[in-house]
Image (tube, rainbow, N blue to C red; front, side, top):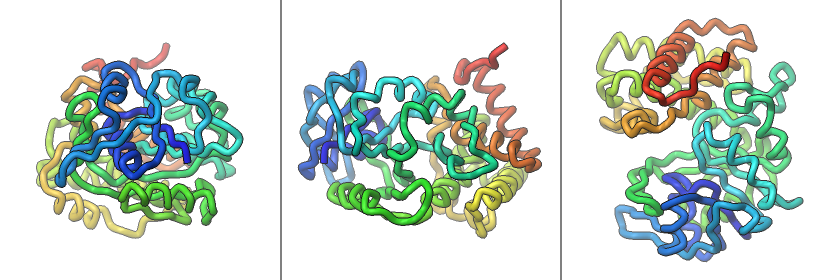
Length: 328
C-alpha cells in the first residue's frame, strides 16, 4: 500500500517513521526545512527506546510530484486544511482513502445528520474541503499520543501510542480494517471502531476546556484543575458539550469530575494550544471550540460557558495575532 502523509510535523512524523521502518512505502508532502530534512535523513522519530528511522519514498511540496496514493494521511493543523486541500487532487485516485489524523471536530462530522447537513462554517467555510475531499473517501481517526518536533524532520515521542479508525457513518468495513492492519505494522495501538464519531466527540470533550483555558491563563493542567472556580467552570462547559453530544448521537455518560481525575493522573503538562500560544503560532481554536459552539447554536442548545470561553480565548488570540480578525 502506497501511503502519503500530508504534514510531516509532530503527528505526521510520529506515524510516518514507524511505518517506513516497517517497510511501508511512505511519502510526504512537506515544506521548507522539514522537506529538506526528510530528503536528507528520511523519517526520524526519537522514542524512549532510541531512534526509529525509515526511508522516505518521496518528498515534495507538490502532490503532483508524488502521484496517486492508496492512503493519504492528513496531519496538519485544522486552520491549514482548506489551503492544503486545494493541492491534494493528484494524490487521489478512484480507490484512494483519506485519513485525517487531526485534532477536534472534522469537516465531515455532521454529514450524515439531516438537521446539520450544511457545511460547518467554523471548520469548512463555504464547504470547500467537502468539495475537494469526497466524503466517500474518508475514514475517521482519533489520535491518542503526545509528540513534539525536536527539530525540522525529527519528532520526539513523549507518550501515548493510540489510534482509533472507523467509518464516518458507523459500522465496520473491510477498507477500515485494511488501514487498521497497515497501522498495526508500525507498532501502533490501533483500534477499529464501529462508532468513530463517538470517539472523536469523547476526546474533544476533554480538549474543549483544557486547551483554551491553558492558552488564556498560561497554566498547566494541574493548576487549572487545582483552582476550584476554574475547574467548576470547565465542568459547566463540559456538561453543555454533553447535551450537544447526546443530540448528535454521541452521548457521554461519564461525569466531568471523572474526566478531570483522568487528566490529573497524567501529571502537570502544557496543552498543545498553550504550546502554540507560547511559540506565537496560530491557535487551533475553530476545530476544538468554535465548531462546538456552532453545532450547539444550530441545535438551539444554551451554551453560556462554551460561549464565554470561546469569546475570551478568541479575544486574547486576536490581540496577540494568533487568530484571524473578524471579517467586516
